[in-house]
Amino acid sequence: MKIAIIGAGTMGDALGKVWAKVGHYVIFGVRNPPQGRGNSNPPMAGMGAGTAVMSLLDAAMKADIIVLTAPWPTVPDTIKALGDLSGKVLIDCTNPLALNGEGSLALSIGSTTSGAEEIEKLAAGSKVVKALNIYSGENCANSEYPNAAGLKPVMFYCGDDDEAKGKVHQLVAELGFEPVDTGGLGMARSLEPLALLWIRLSVSNGRNTNFTWARLTR
Ligand SMILES: NC(=O)c1ccc[n+]([C@@H]2O[C@H](COP(=O)([O-])OP(=O)(O)OC[C@H]3O[C@@H](n4cnc5c(N)ncnc54)[C@H](OP(=O)(O)O)[C@@H]3O)[C@@H](O)[C@H]2O)c1
Image 1: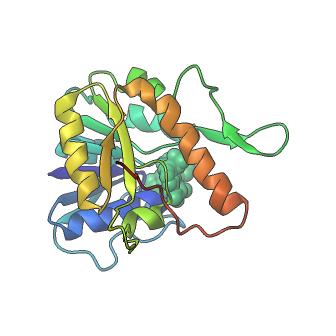
Image 2 (image 1 turned 60 degrees about the horizontal axis):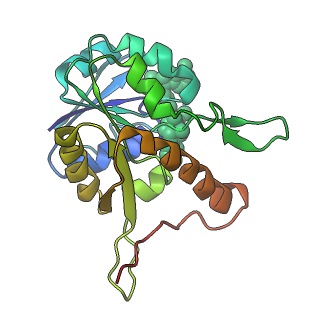
Image 3 (image 1 turned 30 degrees about the vertical axis):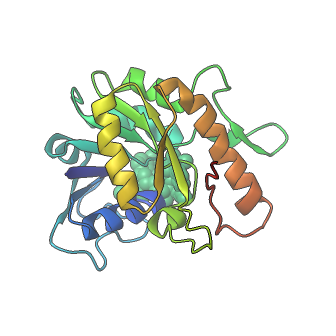
């Protein structure tokens, strides 16, 4: 697949490197090519020939799959810079998080909508799938958690377009996760708080960030 990573920071860098390794053509869409790295990790380090760095517009035009990994406050401007997204699969990895009045991380847009649904309104004609928002980039780049039960970490996703979800399912599986389709895009109202829970249990409380969710069934 031709994948444009939009916002090549911690998260975008982690995802792009793995997908490039398994044979996808990965285009990093940056604000200021070729010097657009700022303080983020250099995404080109150690990568193969199947990668490129381009402007946001060029990256979006050349790819079939757009992976949005920009900071939440920048999302409206970033999407505008991507041009016409009609027919493109847009994987939304963002989380609409901000500090609340008490200094705790919270959902900045409440719980009667979701970041993914707001993004769908901004990215007219695209097929939005919420995915890859519930762990750190580090956990996405290395999903291996050996365990006696042979379980894989789960990665929940949701969206309204089945064909788009099929592609995301494959990309998520290639990262080493058990992909779990949770339903329509409205389910992002559950997946975004799940990211908040993961952050509270790991980063915020100073616990181990090396943990994921797994699914036990019988
Ligand atoms: N970090 C994680 O572990 C993680 C996990 C799950 C979800 N997420 C979500 O993924 C998104 C990105 O998080 P991140 O931690 O990867 O962020 P980050 O390291 O700060 O990188 C974000 C990238 O977005 C681009 N960008 C575009 N407009 C920008 C602006 N106005 N200011 C700053 N950067 C801008 C920059 O790339 P260029 O300079 O190349 O344009 C920057 O490197 C967020 O929505 C976050 O909630 C992150």
